[in-house]
Figure 1 (cartoon, rainbow, N blue to C red):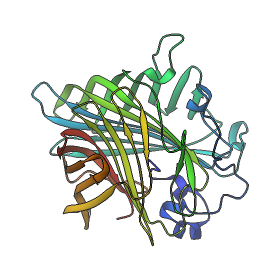
Figure 2 (figure 1 turned 120 degrees about the vertical axis):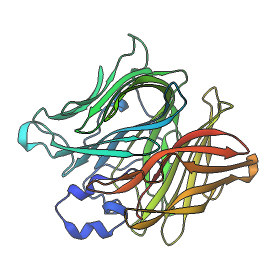
Figure 3 (figure 1 turned 45 degrees about the vertical axis):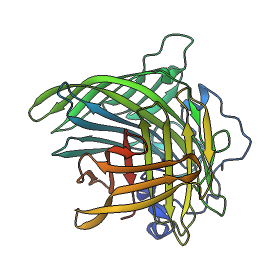
Figure 4 (figure 1 turned 180 degrees about the vertical axis):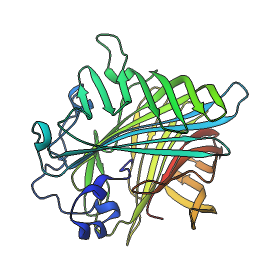
Length: 349
């Protein structure tokens, strides 16, 4: 779903933070809102959409070293608009935030960057594609004529960790919901949402003990909206899973007065089936004490119509992003009717 951890913490009106998680249920007056039936266009939609209030470029990777030890990496750039539209210099209403995470079985690292738009510190260009904040970057390395997201290089660095990863896609972009129009509540709040879930990844992690060469799989989510949540929705549980038989599953539940679920079942060839509210069920199976609170780190995911019954376990239960807006995000192992690996994000706990 990747309605991700959002930037409304940066907005000046503190009372809005009570309206949906991180203010994502606040009224979208003055901003553009997603419309059903609008066709996504590439490479244009790889870039920024300043008339919408919130947007993100979100990459997660499940990785292993030569000994089979598990790792996870996260690279995210968020854009939040104080007003619709764009202008130059300090008059720009765009605010940017970057998150980076790196998970080992023993340790979880997280870091954060902030920037104003219009002054050269952070931006996103659609063609040639490049996203950056300070020295963190996600840059297309695709050949001429190929989709910009078919090959990427990403890097981030903080005092205690860093990574430099190269990603090559072996499948197509996937549109979620109805041709990229992704509904998030019974009341009809929605976002535009698509993914590139077919990356093979190679690169290096920089850890306190030294560099570690890794390989694995990656998943990029792209989403933008102006009011993606209902005002009573207090958080979500979101999964991206790559199964050993080549199928992929994106699924989420939004918690509020009523739970709302949605998902996408993706074949190895990239054909997508949208899963409507109620098709998937998500049941906590075990908790851990994380940052002074009980977090449901083990889950059961069921899709009875498909005969899918998955159990997930974290690589590191302490995968807490202790940032301006805090949340749990880390790599998971998957067993049950299918085996696989994936990523889990949980907010609002």
